[in-house]
Image 1: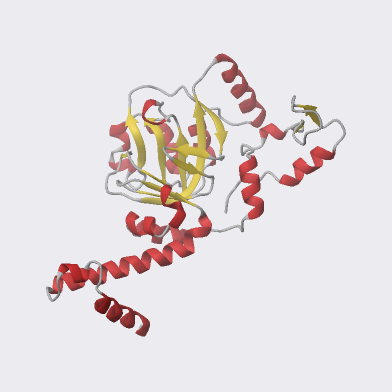
Image 2: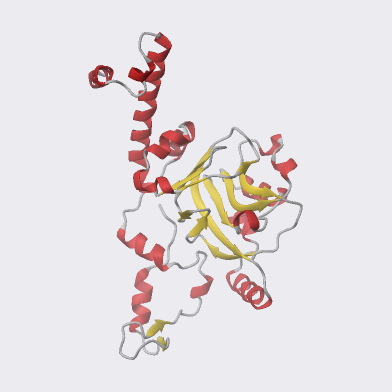
Length: 301
């Protein structure tokens, strides 16, 4: 279930309130000539408001991804999951380096977007952090607010961007029960993050560096861009050394079923190859006769 909790009803009430609009300089008489002013306290919502998420939350059924679902996804090959994603296959990103090679993660996206500092931006961020009582270092927020099964997904400028955190920040997030971290940017303390102390908590990053963090959190649990993929808060994240997949939670039942079916078919094909009773071309893919035999055996189960 997506955790964007700002109600669209609030904006409707605001639009009807006296003095709640100001001119945006649009054409006179147009439907876009006024913006709704945020009420007092609105900007201190824990989740950054996104009109996109407001639309999605109001038009889609809430889907809950269970821990059992995540366990099954973690045990499946990334290729089998990707094959089952249909139009969401494009939401695959590669080019990351893992601190725990060979380990796969599956979890729910806790997203954050960072921007480089400049004086006025820093002042605004400090004001919001004080009003909302959160740490302006969003990795530190995650070390206090992440939930078990979360995967922190950070937009940080890609290979030419900046670092998210080091060993201390990663430990804080790990102790919250998060499954891992995906950074479209960098991290510090590679040796520490690659140690046995972080086994079961992979960090996938574009690069590793000695520099300390300086970019600041600009959006919390709102849509972000990771490489060429759009990632929404609450998306399912599955990652291994191959790359990272992001997809909506409502797809999980169909993905699990289709991925399991594909895995079973490929295991059958492997068994046929090992038997050495058939030509490779008849096994991969299955010839019409062998496919008919396989489907008949599957129906009888």
